[in-house]
Length: 162
Image (cartoon, rainbow, N blue to C red):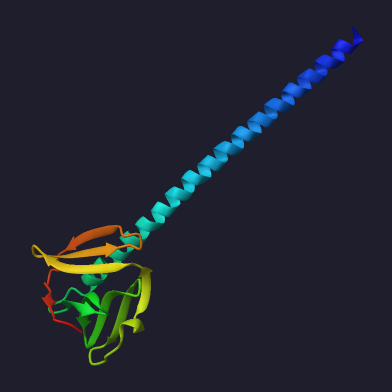
């Protein structure tokens, strides 16, 4: 029976190799599945970041320019815009060409919408007075809409167009 000992070792070695291969395949499956979940979560997080950052940026700029007569609603570049005036200068926040933009200029200058600095990718920015507040709605490239209401302490005014 000297051959049966060799067959037993060979069989044990084969079972060990098969189990290791099975473990390796299952581990790779778990890693691939986990990477897909991570990719989806990261994409959702990036989209959420863009919307939240856009709203936060607009809200903080309004708070910064919250002085008497400093906040004005209007239109610029074919859409809604916020005009923040202070000391002979105007900051315009608007959406143009798929970007949230900011244009900082002297009051008497007449610059074009494409002259503004691109801040974040954004499909649309809507600003409307609602129940004594300003409702700011950011629409992402995927069509998702996020809204925030704010109430400047010094109020705001509306202008027809710029």
